[in-house]
Image (cartoon, rainbow, N blue to C red; front, side):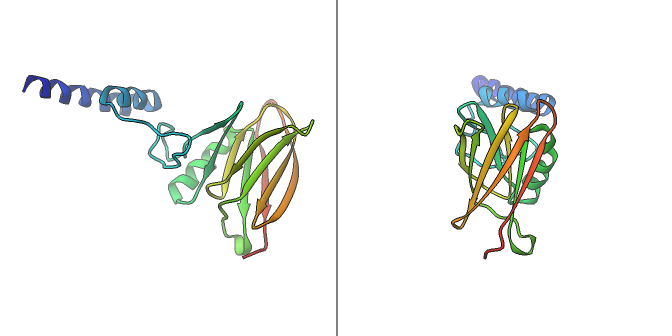
Length: 164
């Protein structure tokens, strides 16, 4: 009985930390309660990023996040885009949002730095300052844009396909 009471107190303390300290508290809560966090394949909003932001993923030294299918996730990505060096949006006919866009980014020396599929109409990417070429493919139709990433600020690129 005492062990069960101690466990309840630990869970209560962990939850209090999660609410009080945001992402750091969430990590503490997961550790204290034995909960398992998201992985790079977990695209749900119930992850340690908080605020409805999808799971941040890593490929080499490039971090990225994509999604925006639901209103909460879409709003979270729009709020976060000024904090990411590259923000991309994928749009179809009638201003419909698109998902499943294949994105490939190469640097100025034609070295691939990212290859991923978007999980929604928004993709945010942390890139080092420099010049990059973004290849975005939707339904076998490729678009290419050159972007320059500065040491401060955010660059936005919108891709539009007129295909159904």
